[in-house]
Length: 114
Length: 112
Image (tube, rainbow over all chains, first blue to last red; front, side, top):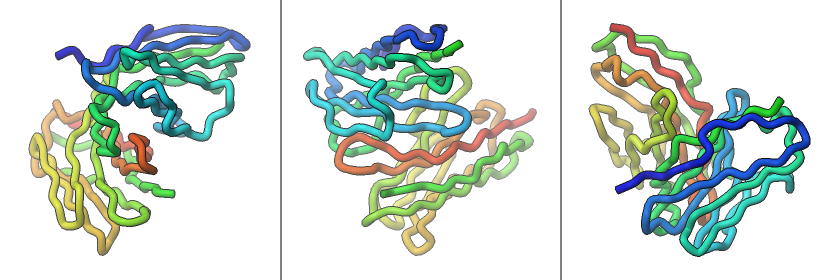
């Protein structure tokens, strides 16, 4: 059974650009969450999608957005990149999204903003 | 909201040493508690969980007991191996969706 797949794994952008990250959940999983991981702030919740609807959103500016498609694949977008957006972005999926806390994480997309 | 405070480390041990990583939480009610592990270059994996007070979660020789009296969920292993070198995160749910609140993480290095 394939795990959570995130693309791209690494990317470098410059300030002001935008970026789109993709996440394919485990087959059959309907909930997809996104987290930002940085050395200073640790793991911070960005948002969660379930059946194409955003159910929860973390405390991030509106430059951070996401969506989920009918096949449960998800994308997140960061516009007008800032240096502080450099981070590992982790996607996680769960089967039913019933607040079980049992998340399956991908390996992440490492974004560097220059 | 819910929060978790975790011993940050780093922690360096010799193989076969005893490991304890402290985790305390603040929460409304009695939520499930989790330990996740992140090996170098990988995403997080669920290591163990406990769903109610006095539950003991265990996996791969690691254990943690849900203590509501002390609001703690300390991670322990009796004899660590080099392969246990990783970052360990304590976590609990926040809200009704799959949002987790994580501790800052504790980096463990085990030397042969």
